[in-house]
Image (cartoon, rainbow, N blue to C red; front, side, top):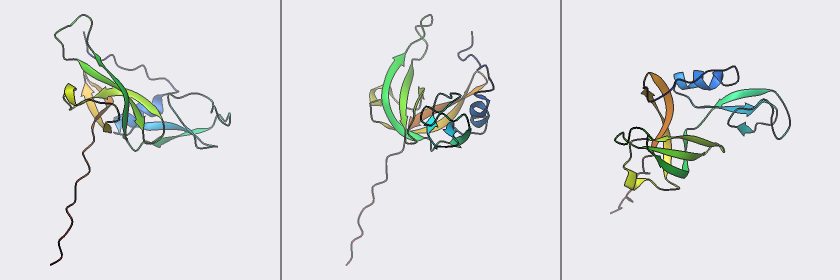
Length: 141
């Protein structure tokens, strides 16, 4: 059995999966008031416009919440860390957290977007963001 069931791409989310194929996380954006919305919906909840565009996400954010998911029929399979990311763009997005030890996962953890191919399906994932480099003050002498 595959680990990932390929998405059924519909007219309403085709832009999203096209973006994933191009290593972009695209967010539906109201063309009239500019509000980001995810998951995609046919009408803006603020101004009721049906016009929209797709805006590339910055791809950075913080972990708002997380769980460890274990496969119910494969107890020896590697667990997945499923996260709710508060994107810096202002929406929340559910994905997996990769490239991190379970003991290092915590709320408010800074993360960045990456893409992984699993069972021939390309998916947006997140990994820990690099820590800001510490700059040492220069010494004038």
